[in-house]
Image 1: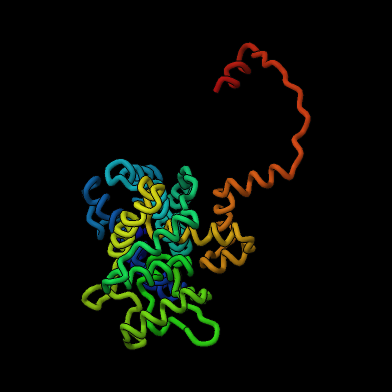
Image 2: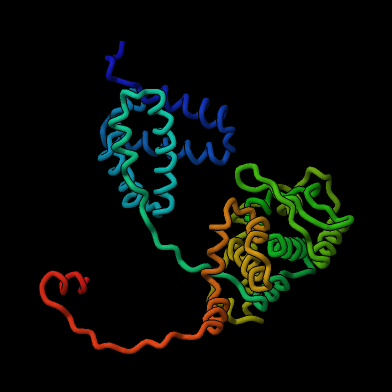
Length: 334
């Protein structure tokens, strides 16, 4: 029988997944999978570095200095980005919030881990495509081949909807509405669904695509050569092939690193530049908060310059800097 102060970790982890994530929160399979991967890495790291099997670990083994060492391992040895490192840590923090309510005796250990901060990271400015670059990209696929026809319709749908690549490849024929007000029903992150209207040109392309290659409602809208679902890598490869062709017409594309998400950014930026309200853009893209959408405002230098020109510059006299001595001089030199 375990000593009173030894709280086995494994049963708590199992309860966290079955009770907290699946039963109480009804978390999406994607969320469950991400949390599962985080715990796999943690348990494997403990086995390799502390020679303890997962069944031998106690809740109190998750001390702050060990968790900090695990997070360093993710960055230095597994070469995870800071964003990925933070995502793994978020999964562990969620578990510890659950564990402290189940086992209050471990509060001291748990509070030490929760006191560890998330790591800050630089957010690069968004890369997006101009209208000219988008037009060259959409016309690049060869319309005389089946793959080229599919790519033309697929990229036009991607730009029109601003869909994530996961949303695009999971579209079925039944998700497209072409009568009345044409639109596409997207199934987003966290089981969130949204409908995005289609331009007449996009609706015409989809109508022709479905007329030339009819399929059942449950089948994928954009299949691969064998009729199965496309993968993220498959869409990316087809896009890069289109970029290579389009760069002959639009040389600025040759020096760009373009992914399906770049097209999503272009949709958002072009909506913003057309004067569409940022809350509407957030709904269009499926953002949970407009805070995420504000990054497009940050990226648009032209809008900032327009705002600056509307404001008169203040009259400020120039003063010569005179450094002070001692600690102030040290601090000012940092």
